[in-house]
Image 1 (cartoon, rainbow, N blue to C red):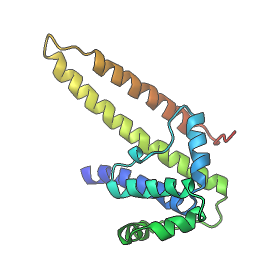
Image 2 (cartoon, rainbow, N blue to C red):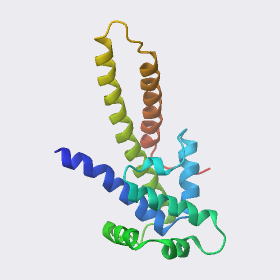
Image 3 (cartoon, rainbow, N blue to C red):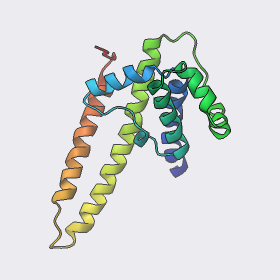
Length: 169
């Protein structure tokens, strides 16, 4: 069961990268939607695995340059290891999906990934708090502040996940 829990974040990361390496310009709309929901843009910090961090950096670099189309830049600058990684994703691309549906799919996947990470962080903070409460002179203020930040972020994520339709204003 632990293996399944560990593989879900990796699968979610792979799904996000599958979309953004094929549609890098979607990063702009995705970031706007996340910011509209009170959340931060997609960064390499959203990705736990170093190979995934390299790929999202490559997506961002493709958008920061003007010499080539982003898709071409990604293709030309991808190392053989990253090319193998992209091939391993093998997520069937549904040609019938509109750009808006691809964006909504990517948005929800980012939210689900962040939800997992925030819940993990909250669990860790609760364990630390419990250990510190056993020490009578421990100052819990910094941990309570982190728990509050995690809770607020989780609330924004859940609110965004609860929205039926993605608002891209």
